[in-house]
Image (cartoon, rainbow, N blue to C red; front, side, top):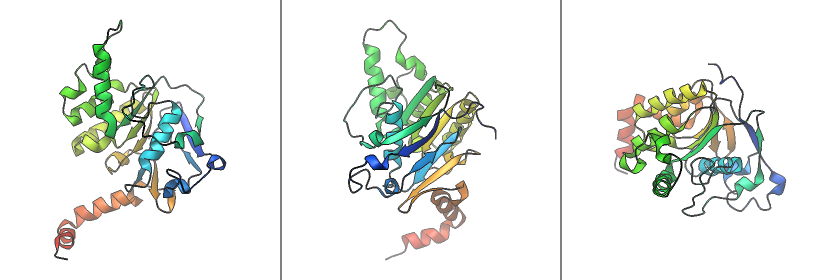
Length: 253
């Protein structure tokens, strides 16, 4: 599997540990952040995985905000804020950028995608000399589509290549079939010099070849192949031993 041919737009990030005043304070109290030194990113795809509460979204949000994205998602031109809930972690990390400038980019955040869709509709109701913003998402209001269709509209129409795409749990509204379609779309964009950093629980999305996978646990952050991640192992065990596992899960306590 060849890389996108131009190298990473974002090469690495480093936690400026000497700038952190108190590691007992959130988000520095998170186990993964406690152990964080530096993460190197693959020029194609880097995955950040782990159980809920490990700090995946917090870490991804910090990277996105430090890059210049709006904390609630969208392109670097979005500045809406429904509620300022993002952490200060972005203030204490250093991003190492590649030599080439990304011409596109998007921070996709499943939990605030509704707010993004609402903001697009609001801006398109205001007078403008340019084309409607929704044209970049397929021309149909994201609120007039199913959750999964509106998610995929961004991947299919708004992501254009030659950019950095940071995605937090994009599988949230996607069926397994749509997740496989997303891998195909990612591959198209990678051939157009795109770089992805993705937080996910989906072993399907994690299966893109020649990617870097970081698993966050209470012991820290470890790079692992797909087959050794906890998500892959649990899914495999369940599918291979469904009846036995269900018997154990559903038996009277």
